[in-house]
Image 1 (cartoon, helix red, strand yellow):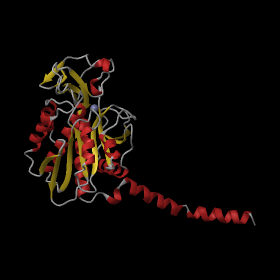
Image 2 (tube, rainbow, N blue to C red):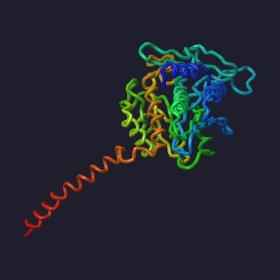
Image 3 (cartoon, rainbow, N blue to C red):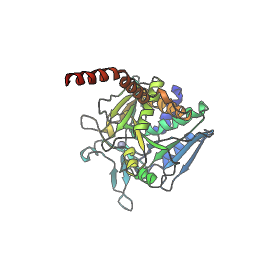
Image 4 (cartoon, rainbow, N blue to C red):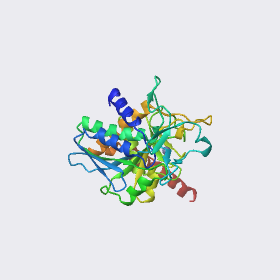
Length: 337
Ligand SMILES: [Zn+2]
């Protein structure tokens, strides 16, 4: 995707305020950014999760990429005349007062820059988690449209992830997508399992609670290898993601992430500040999901997959070592007379 185009998508999404349950501005922004794409339709489930679909031609859909629309933030307690603010999301209680709050009607976010791109390629924002994931899906659809890709795939934008996967659970219970479609969570995650910021997007083999679908994980790795996209393969067990929630309800799921600094705005020094990710990692992830969708639609790489290649090597070794096996059995027979 063209650099300036991606930056304008990032800016538009990240400047939109959001908080758990108060994702209406973000949902409107996503709809606006997808509206020009003629092959994309958007529906909404009863809870307000957005279900976008890119469809060109008659290829069967395999993947649904998902990101959540919210970020930890302040809300006004419903029905409370004094308008007492309440914090929703996983941030230690002793940090909450360490930054002033900017209010957007019924919800507030810490008063930090919405979007900055530094000279050394970092995206700094009050809410990288998970607006970066939302941008990645929007960018994927723009790329599929630009490439006239013959493919079908879904983008899921969920609500209220930060308070316990509320939107994802609703989606899982009412799973609206065709059989065979796998859920792929796109997240930002604290560095774990040897993964580092700036070293490429992470194909997340699991989170704190689960390991993820082996087949889809392998296909993502194969697509990265085929397109020479640098990726990291890691267990990011700093937290749980929506793929775990989906798997609890029987939806086969995989996950990807970009490494995040200052997870949930918490700095190593004990304060609050912007979160940050690497723009290059985000670009790598968009390229990888785009290429994966296109490869899968064209029937996949089949025999060139790393696992198929390993199976062939194992079969060759079995054949090549038969001669040793026969010789050893003959030697044993001779030795026992
Ligand atoms: Zn989060």
